Image 1: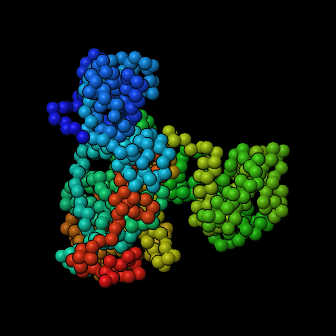
Image 2 (image 1 turned 120 degrees about the vertical axis):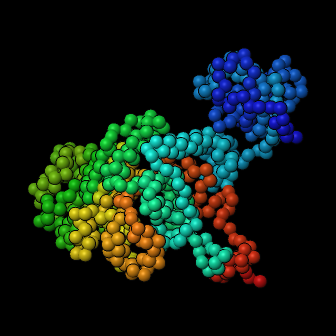
Image 3 (image 1 turned 90 degrees about the vertical axis):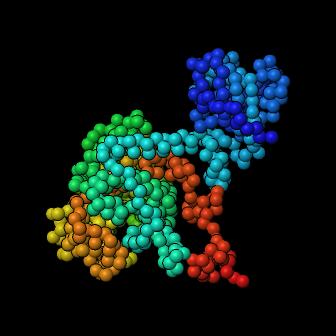
Amino acid sequence: MAESMKGLRRSHRCAEVSKAQEGRMVTVMGWVQKSRNKGGIIFTDLRDRSGILQVIFEECDCGAEVFEKAASLRSEFVIAVEGTVTARQGAVNANLKTGDIEVRAKGLRILSESETPPFPVEAGSRTREEVRLKYRYLDLRRPDIQHNLMVRSQVAALTRDFLVQEGFLEIETPTLIKSTPEGARDYLVPSRVHPGSFYALPQSPQLFKQLLMCSGYDRYFQLARCYRDEDLRADRQPEFTQVDMELSFVDVDDVLDVNERLLKKLFKEICNYDLQLPLLRLTWQEAMDRFGSDKPDMRFGMELKDVSDVVKDCGFAVFQNALEAGGSVRGINAAGQAGMPRKKIDALVEYAKGFGARGLAYLAILEDGSYKASFAKFMKPEELDKLAAAMEGKPGDLLFFAADKNTVVWDVLGNLRLELARQLDLLKKDEYRFLWVTEFPLLEYSEEEGRFMAKHHPFTMPMEEDWNLIDSDPGAVRAKAYDIVLNGTEMGGGSVRIHQADIQEKMLEVLGFTPESAHEQFGFLLEAFRYGVPPHAGLAYGFDRMVMLMVGADNIRDVIAFPKVKDASCLMCEAPAQVDVSQLDELGIGVKKETAQTDLRQE
Ligand code: ASP
């Protein structure tokens, strides 16, 4: 029978007990990690979120009744132990914080019994993730996940502290808002009071934080839950948390400055890593040209080189065709890899095809200085010399080339660069290489939609010097937008916002909004802008990703208490689920037969 807490008070968490309490009585509570009965003596490892403490039951200390009760202890029972702290009699366990002591029990209460759990509660579990997520409440007991969530809480607290010190106000914005189809797909919530109408869950607090600036709140922040109904990738969740902020009377440098100081504080306190400020800054163009990515991993070199000029008159049709079509030929140098087996090279060519490459040309510079190239027969020896020289190729190096339109070349080589780094083990987890990527294109042409779309969002300020191109060459207009990138992951991003009505109207027009449709969607923002709006700018971090990078987790689910899986469902509570017909009736909603798995409305 489960006993109560009556008259008991916990004096310490398990791993808080130390030599300092030697000879004193403590009261500790937690879960039984394991309990071994060695005849006259029972060793019980007691666990809570602080760690593990060894408890010893011996009849001479605790009496027959307690000893008998202790003999019934099994893994995951919840118990309270009163006992005396003593130096460890057996060997000191250097792996445990409490490895030099033990508690000799006098009293024991079994607060709750446990069935045998479906998997052992231990760090580094090899249990399948689906099983762990189904029993997430047990999985969350594991020390590695507990560590992640404790760090997460600490990062949140430090962030709040820092921003409050810097004069930011924490303000909540609503989560039942109006749907704005620009951006990702919204999660919709039906309204009962207004049948046929829907709220949307926010993809970010964007419009509200801009309104707060209009209202004079100056510096705002929020740890905001955001929702995006996208197909999930490994580091995405349908609901996620942003550290969201907005500042008035600022330009790009002000936002970057306060955020660099925030990051410095966080990485010092959490990772004991000294960030050198100011952080590196690359324009988007430079990032693409040098790394083929707008979120380059700076832990290694292997930079892209544009060799279009070098190969422009050579006889290799693949290069020629790409250049004639307005594309480029670029390469990377996998230094020292000339001996890579053919099979491995072929696998890399296949990998490149996954990013739209029609092929991947390669050239190995052998130790004797001769070449082995997939395109050798199309080029003269002196052309090959020039190409190798342009790539700073030395004997022993392996060069890869992609020829296509720029976007494809960047994507192919950017990803190949990363794949090679993974294969060559160049990505060290304890190295933190930050950079800002700035001056993103304002717009991005969508083949699918047949129009320009906002690269960041429709409220992002164009660069003053490019604005005159908005009609003649919209794709060339750069934005006052910036991303913060760590080790090849976009950790956050933001922009200076448009605060001038004429620029905002023009921007919406370029994005294909009519004055009516713009009014319909963002009318309240446009209207607010008529009553005095300060210049403002902001940024949001993906908080889950940030914590994931800080704790070195491979997976965003490992830093979220109750995450969803790839198909956006929760394996534990089984959301989403069908609802009762009466609930749907109240909302005036019917489910189409072909979409319902089992149509509740079929009578
Ligand atoms: N709201 C933006 C986003 O979620 C960030 C920002 O511009 O502040 O990406």
